[in-house]
Image (tube, rainbow, N blue to C red; front, side):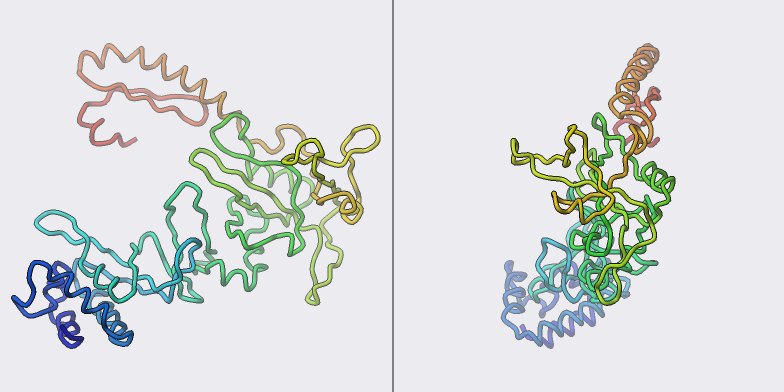
Length: 372
């Protein structure tokens, strides 16, 4: 096995190589363990020879009409939690005798030190050409990139100039900071006091749109949301309002966006894991006109003085869910006779507004998956 044989096979019959690595050699050259022999031979080659193979794979499977498609090979990986190594993006499924199998190009790339990923789950940064994930692989996943007018910019490149990133999010309740390394407070923003949650559990009614309306009513238009945690049925987020501007020399100057009020958060001496706001002599939460005064007592937050329900959109999800379940139960009882007569399945769907819709579907439709 030599480099010339491999390059010739990739150039002349890539459709055979993607089904069987033994197609890289002469007919009958390898036994039943031929694929392992090929991989071991490539792993023993020089870095330059491996690089030539990778380039040949890119040319062979980029637009040749083969089942395997290679769309790009990144300069590395910048996605948090992954090793910073080259990553080939493409479609790695091939059909053999009616069955889908992994393309043999995958172990070929691995032998050259290049891992593989599907192009509809990953892409490359338009500035550093390293790979970032665009589809979640677990419930807590968040974007580690910024999509700017169709361009993908990874979190490391964003960190070189976070102000542009923050400017793109400012005042928009449909967008949020998902890059953990970007700290709005380093750019003149102050965190708004409050714990904000949206989800399916009781009390999780906070809405970025309702909060944005509350800010606009106060004359605040430079604010950003930050997505803190994502779970299967809910998320938590924080909100920041720009309360000062930072000049090119790094010094603060007054920001024309007030007037603002501030509060200070301190550790509760009774509970190490809890915090509370500084109180006045009467036990009321103390509000400051100046952040420097608040900072003397603890961490500073912007005091929005939200009225109850001002940050909410709709009703408590638990209340809506209860009403939806009750509606579904009544509807299911009404169609039970039809289901028994036809042999169908009773299907109910509960909607977010607390209503439900119920119908009888056939067994085949239920098995195939109900398309609403």
